[in-house]
Length: 151
Ligand SMILES: Nc1nc2c(c(=O)[nH]1)N[C@H]1C(S)=C(S)[C@@H](COP(=O)(O)O)O[C@H]1N2
Ligand SMILES: [Mo]
Image (tube, rainbow, N blue to C red; front, side):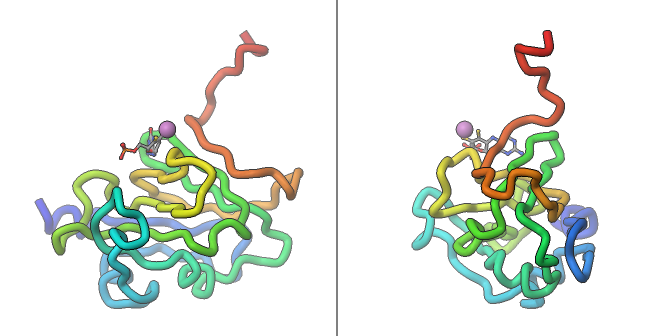
């Protein structure tokens, strides 16, 4: 149900930012998170409406020591992206005038990204962190995966 998805919609912004925020559907809808952008001209394999991640950065103001943003999904998938690589990134929040059915509440789109795998579905928390290796390139995968070396 559309109304349920609007009510349950929550994206938490946490970590090394001046302003931690809880983002609701209305924040995307009413323009608080920046202009509404049709994603198809930018990423032809996608449809719907997104806001630029740059607007979220302006709102939350990452601290200077922050190097990466971690996009945590509800299914434990996550992507870690250098803040400097997020200039073209978008948050897809609406399709056919409604909250997303696939990828709810928001989906990260990185149009110029190194991999389609960075288009994280169902982002529920965006965490700004200081990476011990500041030059670390974008990575993605499921949390708590046991590496072969640990078996
Ligand atoms: N939450 C979540 N997002 C995800 C994934 C996932 O398993 N969970 N897989 C990623 C990978 S590896 C790819 S290739 C794309 C696949 O997107 P699609 O389901 O729209 O085809 O989603 C990415 N985003
Ligand atoms: Mo993938």
